[in-house]
Length: 77
Ligand SMILES: [Zn+2]
Image (cartoon, rainbow, N blue to C red):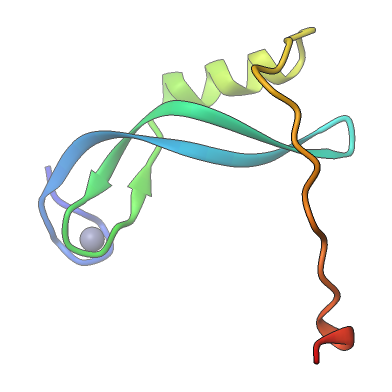
């Protein structure tokens, strides 16, 4: 299998997804993806995307909760 973007070689990897749950930003670690070794494009398989969607609908306890800084582009120095 080759990358749809650049034709590069794909390998199995894991990533951290940045999503929204109940209007709040969340991260999900260790999500299996197929990664292009050349351009870095990540592909989520159908079953994994479905499972992630299903997990978002459940009461799911986070491993840790972070407070994150939010920047405003218009207030840049
Ligand atoms: Zn690629």
